[in-house]
Length: 116
Image: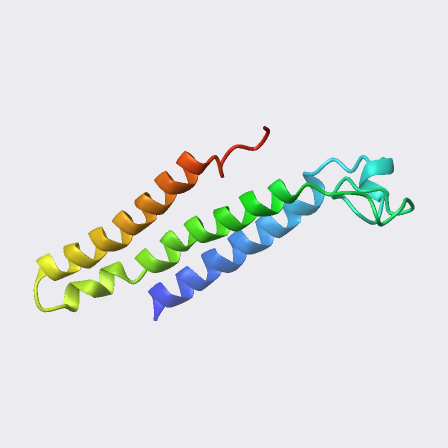
């Protein structure tokens, strides 16, 4: 019980210390950019009909697609419970190969180019 109490005391003390430091550490220098309701670079008082680059959305969607690699590979440690380790290696290699082929295709089609 002493170990649990010590861990709880250390955790609470460290949490309180970090919370107190986080209030005093940052420098608060408000300016017009930080005080504006939108920090995305758009003028909130201007026209909402300004053209927006479709390339930005395409690159963002590609990022989300290739970011699924992490979500697909997270269950890999539990894959050790498959019948053989070679089965786990096979499925992991298959997922990575598909992602690599997709990346190569997008690269060859110019889908990763930000500016033309």
